[in-house]
Image 1 (cartoon, helix red, strand yellow):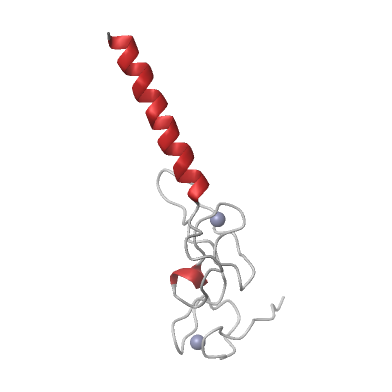
Image 2 (spheres, rainbow, N blue to C red):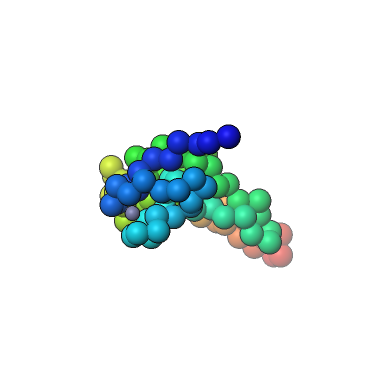
Length: 102
Ligand SMILES: [Zn+2]
Ligand SMILES: [Zn+2]
């Protein structure tokens, strides 16, 4: 089974089948999610469209974005919603604990 490879986003070289990175300039060939599997997590590794700066599934920066090959449309688009939620949860937990210990 042969898979058609897209040319490198940076230097336009057509890669060999199953190549993950361009062997001329080192650019990633797939706009994969940067959330790699680790010891405590499954990771995401979702393959996004070439123009996506953030993963459509989990919101982590994509490989093209990390390598500086594309830039996001919004400069401060780094998941403001997520950080708001986690700081709100921390405040609630602290309040509950403080009340309980008095
Ligand atoms: Zn290249
Ligand atoms: Zn992802």
